[in-house]
Length: 177
Image (cartoon, rainbow, N blue to C red; front, side):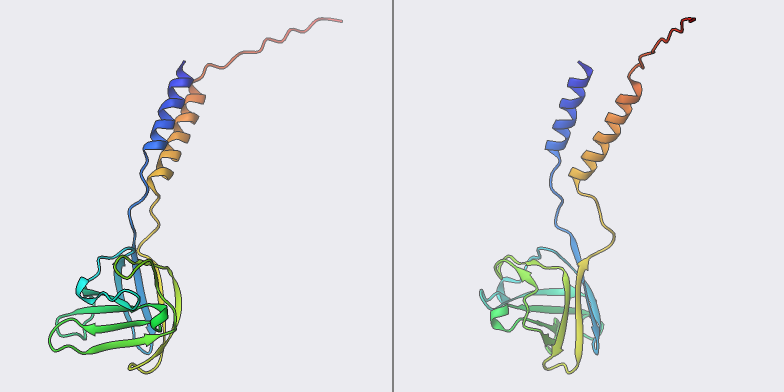
């Protein structure tokens, strides 16, 4: 009876575990220009800068000391449009901080609802001369998904239940020969 209840409880726990929320990604540009910023894996794009099949932009991204207000506007281009990334000053006056490409697209999905792809990309400067590396990786340490937590807790519960089970004793009788 106890085993059935425990098994049912573990099954309900595993089924109720929701998938993890989207993670934040760290974007690191190194080489002749350097910058680092964090964006959600599935960002909210600026609808005034979305051109389906071409590009999308994310505005108001902090971390650009060389811009007039410390924020940048990031424009990501579709592979069919040459790929790459443009970073502009998000304040006034508007000017480009960085512009490079490698012919790749750093996201999947439509420009109106992109999902970034982790990886390392070798960029070549356009208006920004030089060679650069763009690395997109999960921000911070890895955080287990709820389903992983449920499986771990369930394993502890099963181990605890096995330890509580009364042990059967084995009686051995020796006879004289």
